[in-house]
Image (spheres, rainbow, N blue to C red):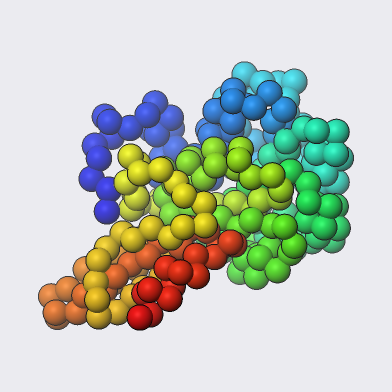
Amino acid sequence: MSTAPVAERPAWYAQATNQTRLAYGLALLDVAARDPRAVVLSADTQDLLGLRPYIARYPERFVEAGIAEQNVMGIASGLATTGLHAYICGYAPFITARSMEQVRNDVAYANQRVVIGAAASGITLGVAGGTHHALEDLALMRSLPNMTVIVPADVDEAYQATLATLTIDGPVYLRLGGRLDEPSVTDPSMPFQLGKASRLCPGNDVSVIACGAMVHLALQASQMLAPEGIGARVLNMHTIKPLDREAILQAAA
């Protein structure tokens, strides 16, 4: 687990407050600075994803579509057709299930350069109820052609993963957390490698493979097993598609 003190972190780190959704919003500032073709679209998520700093700096490269996920997906695909690189900000349960037809036909099949930043995934909006939970989003997104699927484990990885999308010539689904803290588990000095699992804990007795918020719990399980003489290897499978099959086979060997 990362032990780097906060003082050694970049300036954006304190603003992310251990939440991957905010790290994504802050990383978009860096994305826009590096890529003049980048444009951000929001489905009423300016506060959820911390987009205020981005809007203040790049107002002409921001589109607020409101609570209209199907529309925002179509707009993003249209902008991508003109050569722009669209970054969508939405709630995971709505940006996937509600706009599935548009994601599939307009973005995935068309192989458009659209990044879908989906916050509040899983049950991270707990008390909001089942309508605001996204449990099937990974299954839906990974089934689509051309779609890259990334699930960052903490804010450092979320920031790096967002920057990594600059090198992906096609659609990306970036699964982010909600309003719960996501403890730091990765080493911020290590580069993010798309499609390559990272080993966070050694062990030869059993392997635990996890992604996203579950990586922290996997590390806790490994620590609990250690006093019993069980060495549990922990793999952070941040990229669900393309999947690091080699790492899985090595873990099972």
